[in-house]
Image (cartoon, rainbow, N blue to C red; front, side):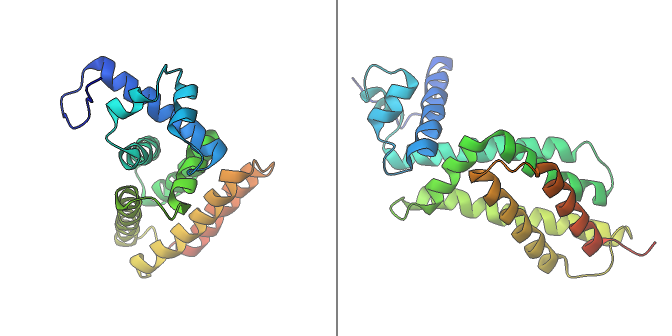
Length: 206
């Protein structure tokens, strides 16, 4: 079987097969961990007759892991952006930014658990790590700019937007970390308390 990897032109069937493999990889990594999610395990979950079909579509394990990361982060980002677009004020968008990420994480536990396990694997190559680094930088820049807009509009009090972005993201990460491994009964309370805490920290003068 001639490998298909390396080509930028993919047919509809090939895109569908790659998506099928990525979905199976997410399931395997979430359940077994990164190191134990072998091609055999992934092929079984994808209903493939041979692990060679994975090698046909992905040059190596690093490329597959990178595609998993980009797939989850892409869906995650699209979900958040759609929520942000529903609001006009900076304050409402800030709340939407936080609640959308909680809601996505709560509804996509396997995907978020797979992300954490890939990130925690010391043996992965630079490519998946680069995808994570890009997300961290994008999150910080985007949030800091949203905070700046809120300050300019008088919606938020005066503060250092870059520093505040660090604090907000740290709180966000703590909540998402808990949601990856647990299904707390108090999810609605967590969502409300987080947004209230950030609102109190950023709100402008009445």
